Length: 287
Image (cartoon, rainbow, N blue to C red):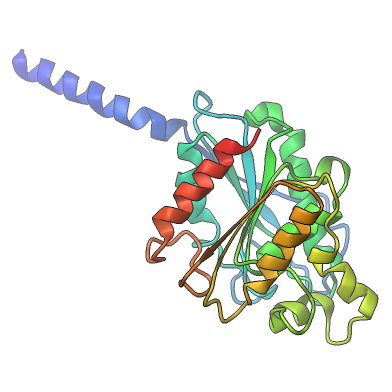
C-alpha cells in the first residue's frame, strides 16, 4: 500500500511539473498560404533552406501558457546579410526568455530580397498583421505587438518601424547590432548589395537609410551593439538612436565594450546576463 501511495505521489508531482511545459504551445504558420504578393525571382514552396535562402516564409510560434500570457508578442527577425538566416541564435533560442515573461515569440523566416527591396518587408509587415488578426485565439493584445531584429534583420526591423502604416505598424522595436544605413561609409556592404542590388539610385539608398526615415510617433526602441563590432559599425545604431531621440521617440541605446557581431542570445557573450536584465527592465518600462 505504501508503495502504491508513493508511486501515486511521485506521478502527481511529475504531472504538476510537466503541466506548465505542456501548456506552452508551439506551431508554424504560413505567411502567404494563398501565394506570394511579389517575387524575388527564386521563390520556392519548401521550408527554410539555410544554404539557398529559397523557402516559403513562415512564422514559428512559441506561446507562453495562457494563464501566464501578458498579451505582449514579438516578431523576431534573424540576421544573415539578407542572404540567409541565423535561425537559432538570433531566433528560436529567444523563446525561453520571452515565454518566461508571458510574452509570445514568433520567429519569421522572411524571404531574401535578391535586390527586390519590397520582398522581405512585405513578409515582415504581413507577419504583424497575422498576429493582430489572430490576437484573440493566441491571447495577444493588438496594442502590444513588437518587432525584433538582428544585423540585417535589424535593418528589416527598422524598415518596418519607419515605413509601415496601419495594422502593420509595430508597438515597440528591439534591435541587436543592426544594419540601419545604406550609406556606403558605414553600412554592411553585403547586406546593402543583397537588398538594393548592385546599382541603386540615390533615392532608393536614401529610402532604406532608416536613420533618415524616423518620424515622431514611431515605436519605442531599444538598441544593443558592441564597441568592437567589425562587421556593422556601431555608428549605425548611434545614428538611429539620435534620429529617434530628435523625433521625440522613446529610445534606449546600450553599447558594450566588447563582443563583436552576431552574439544573439548566446551565453558566450560576455555581457549576456546584463543585456537580458536591461532588456527585461525596458520591457517592463513600456506602457
